[in-house]
Image 1 (cartoon, rainbow, N blue to C red):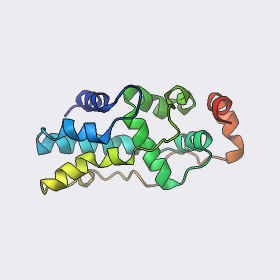
Image 2 (image 1 turned 90 degrees about the vertical axis):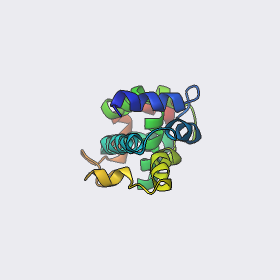
Image 3 (image 1 turned 90 degrees about the horizontal axis):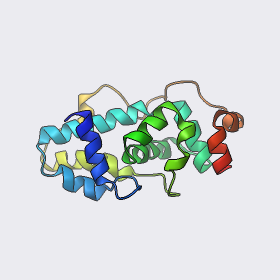
Image 4 (image 1 turned 45 degrees about the vertical axis):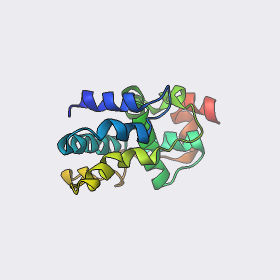
Length: 161
């Protein structure tokens, strides 16, 4: 599965502007081969790793008030579920995430597990076993100071403070 195909699957699993539906994604992935499902799961997991930055965590804290490691993980799943444009915004300029926030629930935990559960049902190894990266490891970048969030993210501060 290519990255283009990955994002196409995410877009097809979205309804309107919402984050992708896990149930819809399961319908889309179920007919694919185990290798394709594994590739999808690996790309998803790698995207979670790509978003594991202190800067994005800081932006998430500003948006929702506070995030622990678990809620930050599920926030990243939600972002991926919003599609490529939201993912790139989160990766490159988290201050630009405001227009994507259309729901108070910024959590799409089940989305991450669609490919994992499909593979498990076929007694196949999960996609995480194919990478050395850790989506829940220490975020990259410089840890943030809560007192500077408004300066770091002026657009988000204007929208959410």
